[in-house]
Amino acid sequence: MEFVSTMQLIFATHNQHKLLEVSKLINSNVQLLSLNDINYTQEIEETANTIEENASLKAWHIYNHTGNNCFGDDSGLEIEALNMEPGVYSARYAGMHKSDSDNIKKVLHEMSNITNRVAQFKTIISLVIDGEEHIFEGIIKGSISEKAIGTNGFGYDPIFIPKGYNISFAEMSLDEKNKISHRSIAVGKLVNFLNLRYGL
Image (tube, rainbow, N blue to C red):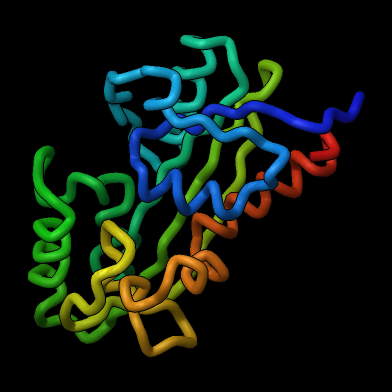
């Protein structure tokens, strides 16, 4: 395949936290556009039953809508003692219109009398490029803290302590988190693919 020096990719998200994390990880030869950048204001309904299917759904939706190469992602917190919940429902665990703090409160309530705190974060990226789909996975193992700690990050970061650390994601700087996070692992695989396939 002919190598290209630059590429424009749409990231199928309105989430500025995600966009910031990914933009720091992806190659500078890739021009990253969010849904806001292309004036796509609708929310893409996450109607699938798995994290993998939701990522795929978002990527194909935007690819079919715009005709441009794009990728979508979905992430979930999977807690062993809760049968891997909240999983695909992580963003709406406490209800459709609840906040991150509401979701955290629900998890801590569900875990209040549980000693097994083992958990993992999983990210799936679906890249749709030239009409083909490619899937990349990132997983980081860790545990659920007894209370929310830290103010950085978003989502469940204040209650997730990555394995080998004694601080939560929310106590880390973005650069520290990006060295080990589930999303950075998946994005790293995406970057490697783009480099090998397209010379980016």
